[in-house]
Amino acid sequence: MKMLILTLSTGEAALPALREQIRRQTFQADHHVIEGLPNREAHEALHDVVMRRAGEYDLFFKIDADMTFRRDTALQDVVAGIARYPDVRHFLFPLQDFFTAQEIRGASLYRSGVRWAPILDGLFVDPAPIDAKASWCGGSATPFLNHGEIASDFESFSFGVHKMIKVLQRDRSDKKLSKQTGRLLDLRRVRSLCRGPDAARHWLAMRGAAWVLRNRDYTSMARKADLQRHFEQVQAGDAGLDALANRLVGSDVFWYRSLARELGWVTAVRAAVERPPAAKKRVVLIDSPHP
Image (cartoon, rainbow, N blue to C red; front, side, top):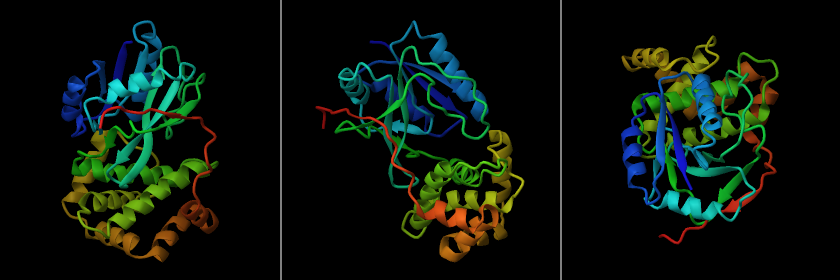
């Protein structure tokens, strides 16, 4: 059984740790890093590798550069666990997320032979394969990956930017409510964590969300260098942005009103309080004999 781990990176702080953790895994996998590309182009490159090298590997695991392993036996447990489900071609694993302090989904494992159509969406750039439905994974082996455990200040700011642009979806008339709802739930968690201890990363994320609200012509994730320049300007001192972030965290009324200014009251309130509809996905159990 041969596995290729594919990592998308734009210089994340966790990448050196991830490289070392992959080397320490009891199941040895090859590792290929796709670096320095804009979001859509990076995913297109990943899809190309999976389809082009299907004859070389049995499994392709998308593990991003902001993820880290929780134990050295993780890949061994995964390979043993998925053997029980030979008909499943796309496994979706949970992550322990350090920004929302809860489990999120986000690490995809593909069997060889899956295929993608060209990516036409400039905002939601990580589609499922066209010939394989995702099966969500649970069991004692999960979660075996952390998300955001090691993050720079810029990455924390970018987290808030990334979530808010997917909430607002400014450049589209047919906004996707399910996408808005999930991201707003994430931001709601970040808002609440801003009020607790050790909240530095959460405040940076809220400053990112506030920055998007203030810059109404910002519609999609810029190249890293462009967003980095905006972040450096913010870090140099921006009392107005700090005040906006404080109001977004401190006042539910102001939070909803800020969303409603762009989404309308009905959509803003519905997206903010509803949960995404339960996905009709198969759940597979990946258990671990390792503590």
